[in-house]
Structure formats: C-alpha cells, structure tokens
Image (cartoon, rainbow, N blue to C red; front, side):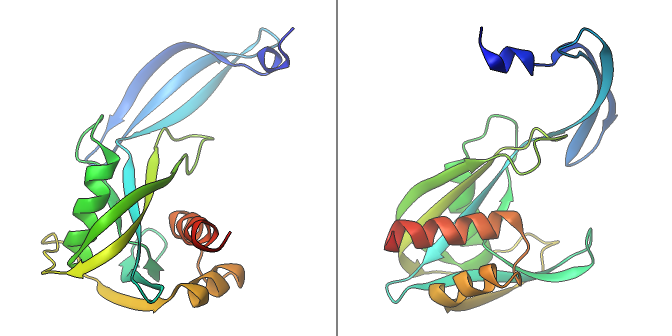
Length: 183
C-alpha cells in the first residue's frame, strides 16, 4: 500500500466566498484519511515570478520598497504577480526585471518553481536567474515606488544567512543562484 494514501485529504466541495483584485478565497470541505470531514480555507492566487539578476562581477540587483502588509521596507529580488491564471512565469519574470530595474538579460534560466505557503494558498512562484545583463530604461507601474540596489552576491548570501533577508522568494533565489554558480 502507498503510505501517501494514508495522508491524502479528498476535496468534497468548494465555494468561492471572496473575489478580490489579487486573490480569491474559497471554503472547502475535505474528507480526512480517517473518514471524518473538515473545513479548509484556500487562497487562490494567479501566481508570480521573480528574477535573481546577476552581472558579470557577481553583483545582484534588488529592489528596496515598502511592503504595507508587514509595514517594513524590504530588500527583495525583482518580482511580480502573473497577470492571469495560466500566464507564463518566464515572461512575467523577464517583464518584471525590466519594469523594475531597466535590466534585460541575455540568459534566463529557471531555478525553481516554489509553493510559498502550501498550507492555505495555491500560489506558484517561478524563480529565475538572469545573466548577461544590459541596462535600459525602467518603467514602473504607476502605483509602484522602489529603489534599485546593487550588492555583491556573496554579501546577499551572508545577509540571508544572518536572517536579515526574510522574504521567502529572495532567500530561495539568492541561495539557489549561489549554489548554481559556486556549487
């Protein structure tokens, strides 16, 4: 017998209870492995894409911005949400990199496809690494305010390991890029 079957919850019903600009929320009833039922709240998110942009000198380009949900100024890798369900995260990552930093990349490769919060959210986040960078004009969204910051990748890794960087996509992206380049 497959031991994973002893863990599987079976969805019985799902009803959308909130439709927002960025997310929808569903209430779900599931059948537990022991036969009982239980409620689940699910956040439906279109997904996102992020880019670890590294220049020839191994500097990483990050964006400094205020995140109102946590009321912090954060330093993150460039990222953004997908415009629609089913959009290609590669195209979104390339677009966000140029919009936020003005950078274009000669080479872009997928580092991972991450599930940031699988306990309650269906978001899938494509995290890419960009090299062969060239500078062009940025074109921020009208409601976007940020500063581009360039730091050595080695320093970014140290800041991840010290706990200074707390944004999950940034932590994942920096560590995976470092491993790809130095592993």
